[in-house]
Length: 300
Image 1 (cartoon, rainbow, N blue to C red):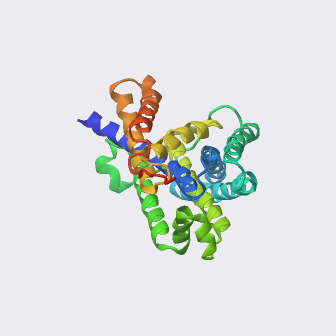
Image 2 (image 1 turned 30 degrees about the vertical axis):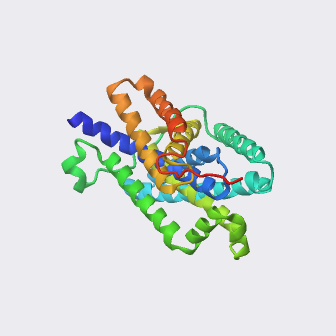
Image 3 (image 1 turned 90 degrees about the vertical axis):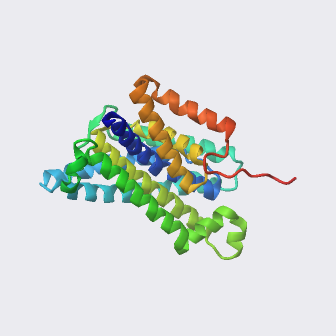
């Protein structure tokens, strides 16, 4: 039974990270019907930013928790700036172009950012300091689950709740929903659609950076390629939950994480990716709108 709970928390941990990244995919798609394939690289850049800041602050003798918070703030800020810049350079000029053009631009931006970090850093795995401390209130269960896993799951849950509140009750959140529903009508009622799209990229990039910092501190190493793998898995999670649905991205991420964890624990770690993408194929065949997505019909 203890092994089952270990796999359960492991699945929730990786699922929480997938969900944080998947939220960026689904928000962008919901607004402009574009898959931002450079989103995984924003997650990777956030992790590297946190690494640089953490190394500098650690040399100053700061406590681990303070280093974690400041590194996360720096990563979120830097990644948000990257998300904003990527949208302005790679996507905004192609807003009215054929749908294939922004897709190619997204793939090109992904490759560019990968190689940029490769040249600026290294192709090898780099050690990431363990910044998540052991909290006293977690001691009764920490020997089974671990403080890092519990903190990652709790942080992801809080972030998802805050995002939901942002979307439902704030002015910019209402503008996002209006733009997602009908971009032309949103413009007619005075909504600055370009600003809404930029804010969507910024928020999605910030969420990915939070995931990058947490999982890098937990695993203890990063390299320039982690964004590609995590991005593909998060995109899978977004499709599983229903692309364009924010609750769907959260559910899809957690579901995918649990499937991978239990498949690794009870079958073989060699089949981790096989189960994930087999699940994706099954959903696309039998429920293409995703777990929480809604099927739509077009009148002709």
